[in-house]
Image (cartoon, rainbow, N blue to C red; front, side, top):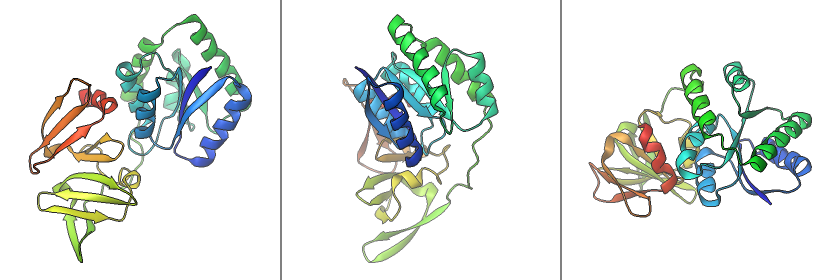
Length: 256
């Protein structure tokens, strides 16, 4: 049995890919079907699958960022990128040794990709070098993803009060059921917006995800240490508590 992780933020496309893979590769076991890059990275670290199908553009961590962390968290995982029609990416894939799928995924193309991936798995050939080269090329050539202006301020609840908080004053955000805790030097407040939606409006140069449920302001970080298990511990400039960095996300700190 071959294990696989899928990452696609659009549920209909994710469900369709699951169904197409069931027909094209009956022996494939999908151990996780994720709707964002953070979930995919943690699932890959937990399951060490032989194959991962990664959407290139997702909220928060992109498929490219997830793939960039695989050298540390799961180096043997074969990657297949899934993308809309981005000519810059397709040109890079055509010149490289890695597989990609265009949305909407065509069954014939998927069948050909499955044959190539299975052949590589059978031969034991690792494509870590090809993946690293492709990521460097895409990083240099990729146009910036279109996005709205980053969030500058937000309103959050603190007991019976509503606080106006400048985003640059936030030390970190942490998921809390249907809400998000907003933590500043003055204390905490609750925001009626899930972490996943926040990732789409925060400035990626200022905020980094360190756990599936935690986003930190990089300017608030005083120090980063790694424990014996590979997990990280962040100390903050304006808060007494420390924050845990899950082991897969430690690989991303090298790029900061």
